[in-house]
Length: 215
Figure (cartoon, one colour):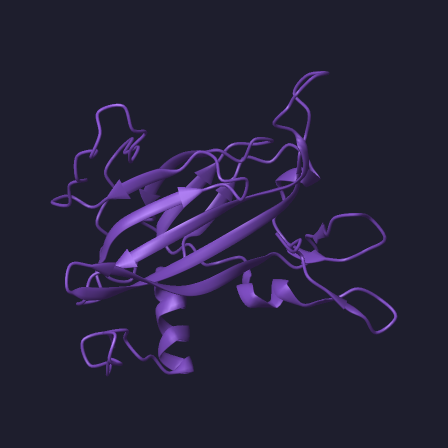
């Protein structure tokens, strides 16, 4: 798909809706969550009466977004998957990390040949950013010795054709614990939704409201 895709003057691959759908399905991970409560069940964001959206976990869903990144004289395709959880519960009476809404982003950067070369993950708060390159891909050194640079805790395994990566998340914190290749026939247990739907969501009385604040 990627090798044959036409490119615009900026080198961005032009994918049809069906081609993008095929790629999203091919690289979607299995998400395995250690579950000790409803706060560990991923789902869709919906507006209720509260000040922030809530998570409807009756139909598990993952939001996805197509992105692009420059790499030398190429523009590479990225697939972004976002899982939302209703909260990160308090671990103690004063827990600055706890609160309503939690989640995890999983991003797959593909080579021009359509092979995953780098995965990275971050929480929606902008914390815990980690990179997992496949063997043979090395991070560049930091431009300054004191600069916080790419955190690479481990390499990612290469995926045999027809198999998926399994992301294991911890209960309550939803930290990424491990990444492994599924050797069985694990199916996805969630549906897809377009990430841009979060910009305009039904909020009752025929009105619509964004999941995000203006800033």
